Length: 531
Image 1 (tube, helix red, strand yellow):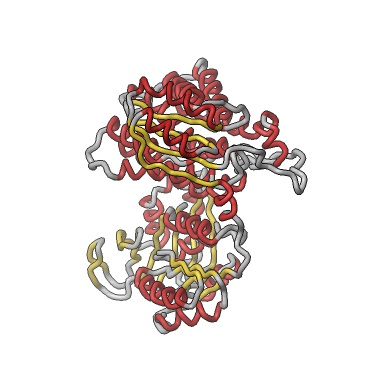
Image 2 (cartoon, helix red, strand yellow):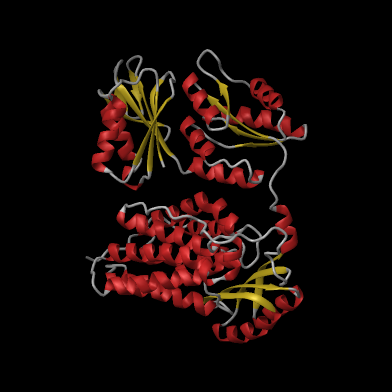
């Protein structure tokens, strides 16, 4: 029951992990109390995986699975950020050292060996391993995989068992680490690893894991207590080119300088992370070992100060068609800006909406490719007046609904903008409309009355049935990998379409949730979104 490792599937998994970390990023940041409560663990994990995906994207289309895995591993190493990102990079790299030999077939035993190698590599990379952290979660996954592989030859089920064990281990981290128990949270790095493992399990099995609480019922830290015990004031990171045999001496030089030492890499290229008070001494140790580059120094006090939430007002302006979508936007916390064939938007209209909001922070959702430039022009004028304005490049209204769903008014402006952008960008979308006259489309010639299907902005399907065309759109949007399908019904949508689509989804993809919304939009009988 071995599985083949293919370049396209590996790249899809890497992107899925990155998208999942983007969604969980704020949650993980909020859990961050170890090693320093600087609210960046989720951010570091996300950008570490972004670096890996960018390395894959730079490969030619004909890259082999080995080349794809090698590029991803190097991208993680070069782009690893923070304590969590560095350990995550080594966990993945450790597993890939095994998986490179399993391209033609991945067995249950290979899964167990890969997870075991990942855990061993992470423990070896950390100067002073702390239980109740990401290391503990990785070890639990490896143990569960070994136990499952002893009785089951299906690699999918073995990995599913490992992912489940990781979730259980994460819930127990406060019982192993007093700092977490005092704060009433699970380990942030362990949560990031669970997101990655759940993404692998979903890619293999198509099943979404049961949600687990991010907190545990233990006493919360008392007000006025200090979560951040006396420790080093700076985080120092750098990449290092040096022969592998020099690394033990480097570890010995860095270990007395502070804590949270993590050194990962191999074959002459290393990523070094350490918390110190003496920044110069840490960099000098790197120079003594080889050639450090991309040196990064972070002062924790400054970083924690930047993480404070906003206090001014914030408004989200979303361009919409139809009273139904306007109502949905209001209920999601946004301010609708109506447009239509008889009500086109202009720079002046958008600028007036921004000005009338009287908000210190404004997030704009244009929801049409032709709107983006005018929103940017209006935003530039508002910025000159002192407002903070971000224009997200949303091209359809279902992207806006997804972005609104992840908005958190208590989070900083920049963090929220990134989260909303990621959510909108990860939404695959389509629509159906009725041809008003005979013509030629990108999908071929059509006649008046034909149902036209739009997939990610292009006319792609011509048919006679709204339900059939809509379901073909869902298939092309990769329904099999979806977690949720959203249907926004227009005023010309046939009454039975939503029920028929929901029934088909339940039959062919029972793991997918279907949400039906009344949009009452014209032109497009149905908007579809796949998340």
